[in-house]
Length: 295
Image (cartoon, rainbow, N blue to C red; front, side, top):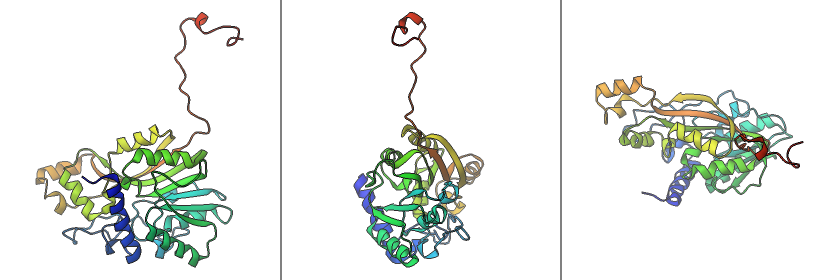
């Protein structure tokens, strides 16, 4: 089994090759509309997210690696500071810039040098002076506390080995009262290991996905409140893949049950003040009252 650092290096190499090749299928499997990698390229998994027509969309910066539209749900306002985690070639950052405007600021964070280089070239070509791209690890962000009004991320957190640290860091860089909108891949129910492995071959963004309930619990334990599931969509696995591991009856049962691989967009807020758990009310008034506490 690979270590956390080995997994990160695999991601760097894979996405670095994508950045240099220009399309997700050029160097592995992405999460975009052309994801059809694996031993049988005629069985694609539809991961299309439909950026066309969205303000700020830049086709040259869209490498087909997303699984949602977090910026569409992020409630970005003019003047906001927005941080895009796993910013890739910059597309979600450019969409965020269309919302925050000239008075705002967008910071993209990515741990793949080739992606940072490509995103910076795209920003320069577009003439954007308030969009920056920073090299760094989501588990240890080189960003100050209480920086962002909004954090967005598109199909990246599932690739992070230590999701607890990633969401803790997200909490740290958000201003009190700030929020995130993150699109990601999660699992629902028990799936045969072989199904997950083959799904990773067809759509690389499935790698590292965890159970939906566990994912939401990690968000809550990081200190976030107001957690909302903004969108949920099943990633439909083709029968040609499932029949390698399931009988026809089991496939029919799988289709009818609420389990599988899902694209979700999750919203959550950083409280304006620390959440304090109140002690249980005392049963004896004399035990808590005195000259300094009862008036």
